[in-house]
Length: 409
Image (cartoon, rainbow, N blue to C red; front, side, top):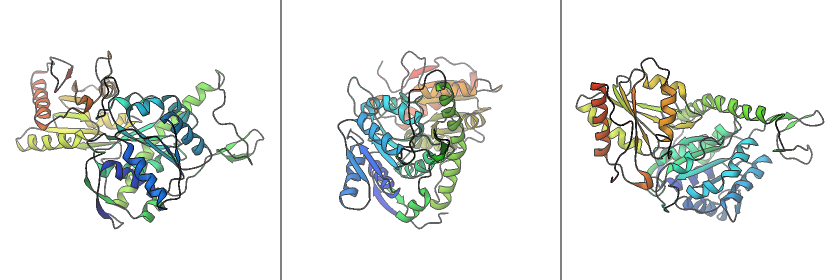
């Protein structure tokens, strides 16, 4: 039950993200418009113009520059936000590694959209999957309510002194970004109190003084210098340690937010839906989970022990939660809304398969790639996937490990 009184208003996913960012009292936003993200920065610019938030809004000439501005602002100690999609995220690629390597806790909303070519403005996860190893925390929302809640949580996660890593929150393009939903929103003051004031790690500078890790003329530091074979490896290892620590931080922040809002999403890392006694299960991310849950309910009504594991935090990968939830299942279909070309399956499938590989009672695992370029995946198609899992569970035989569904071929 929520501790804080909230009001419910109709918002599409983009407007929900913009509102959440405004309520988090962001100091700097640098952004460039790209469909289907444009609404986020347009709405935030209105908040700035109307005096509803004291934020330096920087209009830039490209997404590469947007991320560069965000890194610089964050390095001075500012709370920083941006948003992008698809080719915009790809154009940022060089600077995304700088953001994570310089330990700048930027929060970015990625409105997931297919990568060209051919050009396509609709949803799949190929844009964010291109950045899975760049050192950013990745969280995926099922609906606009979760997109709103996740942005607020993301600032706490990214800025935690045990983490200090940039964080992206993904929401499915058009499916969520442009679709109106009822969203329960917290009062401004409650959000501001929850995220708090950004804390800055303390480090020892070249003079041996303990100073805040930020760009400050009074306490000179070099951030992101040339780092050759003498120390580069150690700094990369530190990023990995922070990713591991982020697992507990994400759960903690999620639980604290749930106490305030009355809303929870599994344990913050994964959401297990009717998995306790399930014999067959699907694994997916994003808005598709809502449709899968409907199919699971129908299967359960017919006596079929079906379940769903929704991955909310893709980075850091919650291996222990994946293992505990899928152990003992007879057959599992990993649903990818992206393709790793030439990689024998989608990126989520690779992650899940390696997580369960050492289980003595690991399930039979198949990969079903769907929805590229925004193609719909109706309940009937998901039902067919579960029917196939039933057959695999009964016979123990897999005809095709990797298969495209909903495709003309």
